[in-house]
Image 1 (cartoon, rainbow, N blue to C red):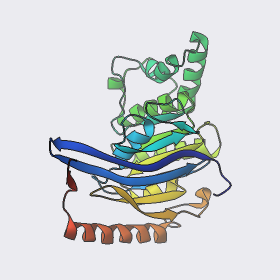
Image 2 (cartoon, one colour; image 1 turned 90 degrees about the vertical axis):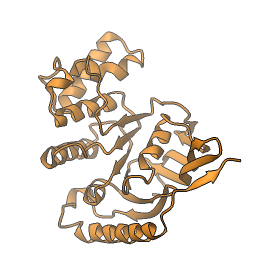
Image 3 (tube, helix red, strand yellow; image 1 turned 120 degrees about the vertical axis):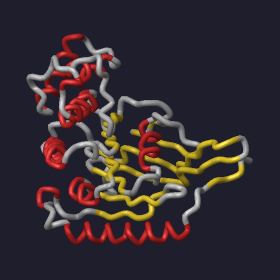
Length: 271
């Protein structure tokens, strides 16, 4: 990984929220991370570890209390065209059709009407939504809504795709199908995205999809351990990754048990 280009760099990122005039709740503490070209990184951990908060800071949707994030060498303090995000709740605009939802981000790039139509249609076809261009979100299943979210995020050709628990609201079959399709698009280089970060609670999902699994701890949120996945993605299956899944799961259980014995919210007096 040493000779790979660093796409995203987070340096000493911390985040706290004000509880009242005298106290802050620290959610993230001194997190540093490098994401390289050509890799998928999974953030794995239970709710409350700050994974989604950190993802929003990376995306420029939330300001860090301290620290810095750069993407392609540029400081991130607002949403960047180099990154797109896919949300657990789909985050579609109900008054727009499938086509218009996918085209929404393209319009902000000041593309011509012809290019917007061409790119949006190509993405709709690639993600498996052909024939539903004129449908509205209320007419779609959960899986189809998430495909629209993916198509919208990928249409602007981001260098980094950020996925915040994108499959947790879907049934097992639908989630598996979309994960498989996304992985195939990534492996075949049909999408121009150079790196991905996925937030998940699912150990098996993290291991099968990613190159690195970062296990998070809480109070305050931090990266507790990193696991590198050396099995070629094309050879991964439930059986082939079983030992690694069990190792990570065992580490998580020990970590949670230890944390529960010491658990207290990390609240500090304001200076």
